[in-house]
Each structure stands twice: as C-alpha cells, then as structure tokens.
Length: 106
Image (cartoon, rainbow, N blue to C red):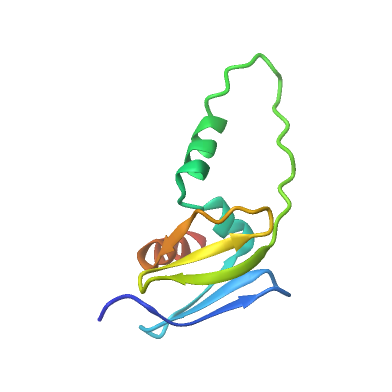
C-alpha cells in the first residue's frame, strides 16, 4: 500500500494540521513545526545561513515570526502545498516527508 492520507484537516482554532493516514495512524502538525520544516530551497538556505554568522556580537536578535496557515492544497497525489499569511507558498510537503516530520515530533 502506498503512503497516502485518508483525510486532511486544517484546524485554524488550534493552529494545527491534522492528517489521518491510510495505515490508520493520525498526526497533528503545529503550524510552527511545519513552517520550521519547510522544504523549499529558500527556507533551507535561510536556516543554514543562520548558523554561519561570524560577527563579534555577543548575541543575535531574530525577529519574532508572525504568520498563519491560510490554505492547504493538494499537489498532485503525492504532497501538500501550504499557503502562509506572509505570502510564502513554495514548500511542497511530500507524504514521506510529512511522516518523517511526525516521527521527529512524537
């Protein structure tokens, strides 16, 4: 059996994405964990650049990120595309990748 969701629900009140998988398991993904795990090239490059700052500052201040998840859309039959309130929507979350994120947060 191929990995695929049985149902997908965006719970805006709780700020989570709920995926019921065909294998009978279920996963809840917080918006923060989904955004932190965004697989797009822009986000992956941004996070790797965070750790290569060679300034003499005692500490770095990072602005608080403020966003909400506005829309979830199927990307073919293999992934989800997430649309964030700040305009970001280039991350494609494949089914395997979502299962990997779930195993890291449980």
